[in-house]
Image 1 (tube, one colour):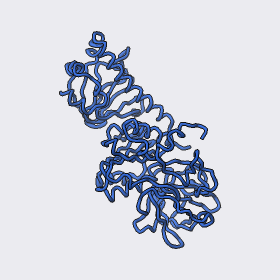
Image 2 (image 1 turned 90 degrees about the vertical axis):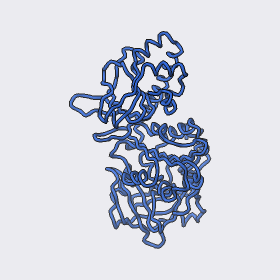
Image 3 (image 1 turned 60 degrees about the horizontal axis):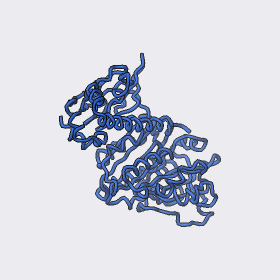
Image 4 (image 1 turned 120 degrees about the vertical axis):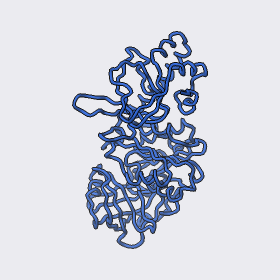
Length: 151
Length: 287
């Protein structure tokens, strides 16, 4: 799996230095999911996070007796999972492939461990995840406005 | 449809401009549970020549008159198409119209989309909800003259899969006319395999050269502001982003002042304006 190539098509990875990329490459692998496959379950241990190479993943909330509610879909170059960086390192949503999906899977525990040693990497990853979280917060706020609903 | 461009009102006499002409419904299609597309034919002569983005005033006898964007027309300019969402007394009456029913129509009015300006450049069409209707004739024109444009993308956000307009046409634009069509919904439902999220979430997947792109955006004003900001943050000039303002238009000829937005009358100086012209005003709650 070539993370360098993935960086070219991912705004998320574009800010990483060569050394950071080299480390992340050492703790990652390419994975494939069929449509409907689950990447991680709600409340599951956040031990792996993903960047989508190609495909689409939905973030879902499940409740007994009801169909899952898809709150957001993520596409090429986007990060799947932010809770791996923050205690208690558990997922708040279920992630499921909407279409056949190729992704890079990162070993979250190893990334966290390295971040304890490499403060620059920690700073970079925190910034990367924070930026993504802000984009999603902003999007969620706009969704909450129910702009297209009846006036 | 006239040659597309930034059409402006040619200063008709006020009396003449205020006089509705009789039009009859000749086709009706229910797009969604609350939105209908109606095709009208004139009862007294020629059809209406319009530029994409212009609007007419639609008069329901004994009920009232509302401004409605033109969603299209046929090639011989005989018929006129409006897509209307039922949100009040007049639009509810329009929703209830059947084939053969009569309405009054006057227009077209206002400044349309600068389609000529987009020739030779990449084009992003951004629509939210019923905002796809005023952009439909733009995409139709582009599809008919596809070789005149660079990369063409339509990003369309709607409330739910059931609220989506022009489903067959979206498919045609995507498959037959090389328009990169992206659709996203705020709320998914069973069987929806598409995107869920705000319309701007589609932009990172759109292929365009920011320095050589024209964008045309229509939807609720908050949506247009969010899309315009995102386009500008990605390098598109605010002057190249065009939005369609919606105000309380009554006379439609810049006479009554109901639609005043700062120094502009939206009916006469808009509804389509460059974002650069109004971006400061769009932050003012007092307007």
